[in-house]
Length: 238
Image (tube, rainbow, N blue to C red; front, side, top):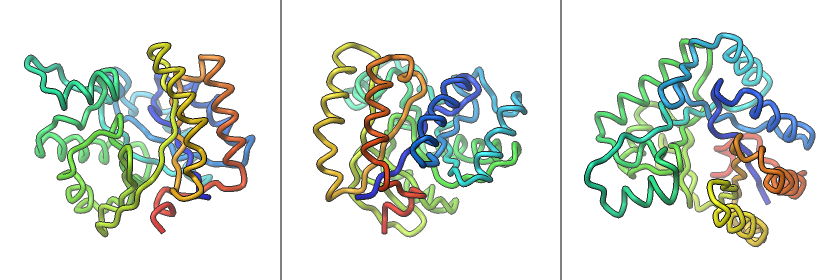
């Protein structure tokens, strides 16, 4: 069994929650990957928060991976929505599936801008994860051209640079509605058995830790994974 842990939505907007999630992980001996948003919702540019960036540099030096997590973590409004857009923006996310409906030109610009932002604040990009795990497959070779060795969606992990892919289980909670909350708890409890045959990802979202039930379930998941933690995302592809 192999379990990779990550903290999503890493931004100065959630500084306290991120430290809380880190403490839960460190107590169980895992250094989670940090999915960093360069300018969360267009209101939290990394380079305007030097203390937060210094903390991220410290964590990367200590062995935490840094993944680029979109650029704004926000999708643009659309006047005429199709089913694919509705699923990505209303089911898989709350209007935050940033890369689900961008053009290739937009995608390249946001990735390149994000990489520049990480470089400017002294961080190395160890991978890329699209918000809500939603992106068109034509993005993979574009990531590969930029030397990206790890990305993931709902069902697979990928090495875009080599073209390799592997099925993978992802476990995460959702707190937007009571139905999502209880269904995500039930899924995570039932699906852990699949980790015997599939490399597994545990994705922590900072806001979920405000919900007492999800905090307890997060601790349960981390306790379950103890002793089987993967050091890096790419190790899931081996």
